[in-house]
Image 1 (cartoon, rainbow, N blue to C red):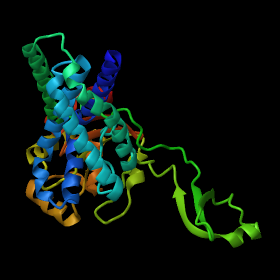
Image 2 (cartoon, helix red, strand yellow):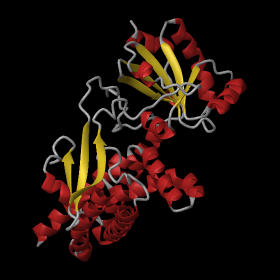
Image 3 (cartoon, rainbow, N blue to C red):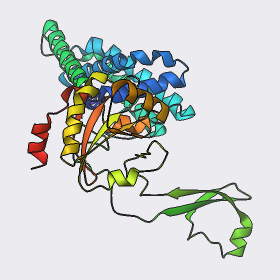
Length: 368
């Protein structure tokens, strides 16, 4: 039984550490998902607390994992383990039934699961969590209680430092499609697949076929089955990592941006009203030097043309503005504003507004 108890605590400890790390390394992404829940539950005003909740929740999950993995003060941390897992399981059950939020983000952007898969995953984890809670008094730390508390406190402090750093700069590890080195405009064109679903008139059974493969020439079969629905599977839908860019007149200019083979800078402002205007003033000399050197520099924002015109007049921003969905812009760079260097559809580098680079350093590194 001792071996079994240790296997259970190590397994759940590793899961909790991984889950909390991939969310905590990108706390803004976790906060965006919490905001989605607040909207779904009819309390959008609570969104102002989402970032703090995200950091604290992930930190509690992390120190619970550390406690289990290293066998530290499990007699008390088991209560937190049961509380967290019960909360996660109930929330994902609600999501699995009503699909309030398409992606709960239980593993951040590192691993994508459907709401049903997430709920089933939590049910499996509960099979291990409940025994750990029942056995909590049988676990014995090899250290004194003050040592356990000190080590868990240090882990909590380190985790919070990592999360705060990632908020102020950029995630230490970027799991998103627009991470450094990723190609966001795949050039290959794959065939689009069309599927049809037919329903048996007598039994109600449903079968799905490739549109070219269903038995349309079988008259007996056709008399017994009726068309139900169809769907399209387009492997090229993510060619631009979900990005659709329009100019201020509403023309689609995505291809002209992502298919450009030369270097180009994309200044991303996912919320024009809340952007750091001081950073925009700092980037203007950089923009002018890029223009003088023949390097494209544009701004992509979610704001509408009227708001953009008002903003440009108020702040004297000279660069060209384009429009895209704010959800996609948030996945491109977790900074408002943020800067991306793109070449031939590949993300060369990206910077948060606190780390906007010096032109001479960038020019020396990339353009010579």
